[in-house]
Image (tube, rainbow, N blue to C red; front, top):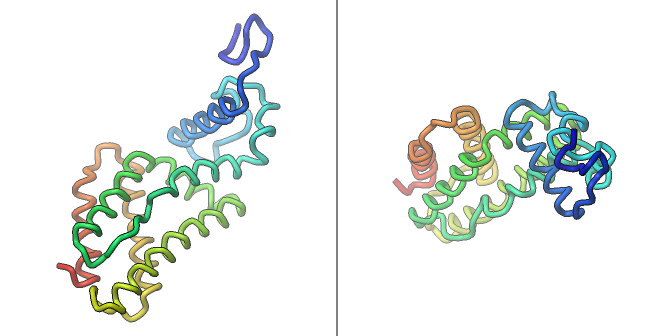
Length: 199
């Protein structure tokens, strides 16, 4: 029987970028349906309808494959702007909630992968630190200018708020497809606004 990657029993050639996308899409589908612990090269390539040998032309490991999915989610998680403007902060929180609404199962799988794969754990930690550092820099500037309430330790507070966002949204939107994104925004907005003295 022919698969999408075969024609008459012979392997069909597909462009390199298309093969890579098919592998990534297959992994994403499997991660949504299962967990990182259940993932294997064989399962990914069967889902992609491609020969197993093609995997290593695109990825060094399953960890590298998962990290390629993480990079897609990095863009735009933290926007630039003035956190003293309630509209800006709410827009950032709405965007963050939307990312988790669309990709919650993938983020949950990446979090799971980080517990089992040192390469993923390092990159995931780096991803979190990038978001925390960027947010902390914005808050430090706003506090120095007197636009938001001072906090005892800006970076620690920012870490707590960012990690709270991730755990809360992963639990709400990564597990329950019927969870209300607007309610999630309201909860996070209340906590962030009160912490920064915007309420």
